[in-house]
Image (tube, rainbow, N blue to C red; front, side, top):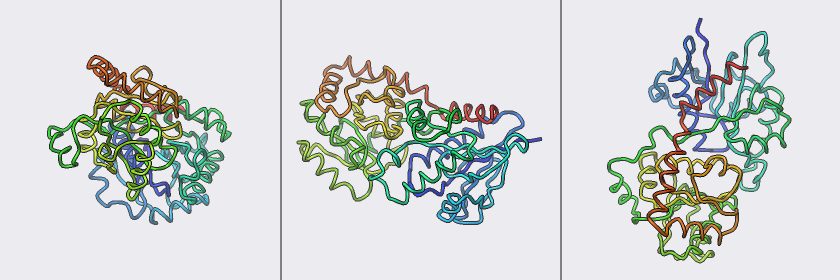
Length: 371
């Protein structure tokens, strides 16, 4: 008899989290590859999901398509309706799941969901009201019906425990960079196509205060170096706002290069051209770009937050959060010598090996076995 774990993909959530969506596919593939003997993996997707999804996810046993599009499913799941998702073992890489009453002990039904960040609780003003309401409603449903809520760090687990009475149902399983994140052979050509200079400091984020770009720009000015700055993941239309933040921080316009979301090969090429990655954001979200930096071996200078400490350990130079002068001093010290750059690069590469999707998948299988 085969035990099937069904993973919810193409998540019908109003958050629009591109990293979480990419992580869902990475995890589904890794779950299929690492499936124990006698187990397989199927995907649950809304009716408007890509029809060629199965071909892009090798080794899946199949795809179960729901009878409704994603936006409708999101609303019905929030209301507590199963919407044809069925029962059995269900794992969601987001909060989107049919969180309804079930019998784990006698019927062996399980539902586990994932929470990548607490923005809806810690920075609600930076999200659409519908996204905040949906997230909070789904967590309330998870409190009532989820067998486990997975978070990527112990720091986030501690904060979640203060928000929701989940007890020992909170489990920590870290995310990882894209499996395909490798420096491409045509990295120089890709950077030229993106019109980027050589030897820049890399950071990422939006104009939202929690993204930490103001602190990052002020730190770059405080570092006292005439190094170019590349900002990744700028939401479409926010380029003028980010440029205004940089100008207010005293960063010359000629040094600033703003780019949006890039595909994996382009992103790897951009990281490969960076002399350092500056992670100045607070503790509200999982630091996906920090994981990218570790994978590529880019020296990291980070705000000393519980999340960064947990993810990076000793593989970074740290400074107090929101202290631009301290971050700038650490960045200047890092870039002051080839030896310092090489040391942090080696530490980053070593630490990056701890984060893989097969490793995360094995822990998911272990979680469901324990349940």
